Image (cartoon, helix red, strand yellow):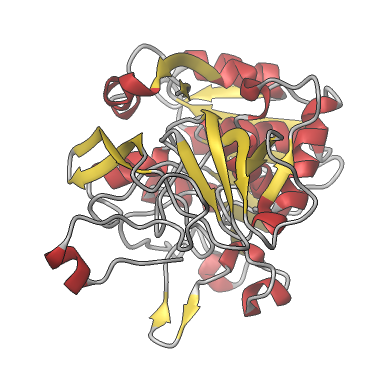
Length: 383
């Protein structure tokens, strides 16, 4: 991938894209949502991305806004000025690199938010989501997350997908864009909370926060065999959606102390797995406090400050507990499996799409989503 260095930024107006020309008119422009500065993501024009021999250019048909994009908007996660934001693409292959096989132009596809190369040390160690995390200069946040982070993302008319053979997944006939829209990130991340927590048949699971990721964690825990799922949120409408996705008990933290209520519902036993899906000290600590001895805290939240582990909640380090973290698994096989779950009618996540906008309205969509107005869960953006 091409990255713009400081000298180039000083001398010309250029944007991060894939690197080798694909034959499309290089003067052609597209509309895209660009990060300008803290508090400003705007719709503007920029060149259609170039592609290299291992890449694919897809024409976006549907995408969405993620909570991580709001972190970018607020300046809580740094990205380059002029970067196209977004990492949840559904689209149609417009152009294939010379080295890409097994796909054809005009094919409907998705790509995960995480795009592992398949050849890095992280991939070869079985952790493709962390492709790119290790560097000679230390740890790099967010591993294999490139779209809208280190390269141009999906809130645009076109998107360059790197390592296309490893990352493109055909959309099964009969599935709509909105049915698969959660697969690239939200569904993959939420399900990974249950998977990393090693939820088993008969487990008791507590899930803190029922935003889109937490709701998918609820669905994932149900699919993995949990028989008592307790969810916590402060929005009644979200708690109602959680029931439809598999929650057995809902706790409104505005009315009850969530830790006390979970311990009451489990007769003081605690839960086998607690899934934290918000990224705050309170929800992280609460997850620790409701674990049974030997239980697991599965953390999905993106934290913006240091975390503190209280002595009592951590049983002074003697509770045989585990704390595990997950970054959204990506790659074509992960996407195939998630779409198979949808195609097999095991879960329906279309109720998570509560609002729809055209790409021309994306600034309005950001305003709604970032302020969490009008009961918004996810928005569908269609160029």
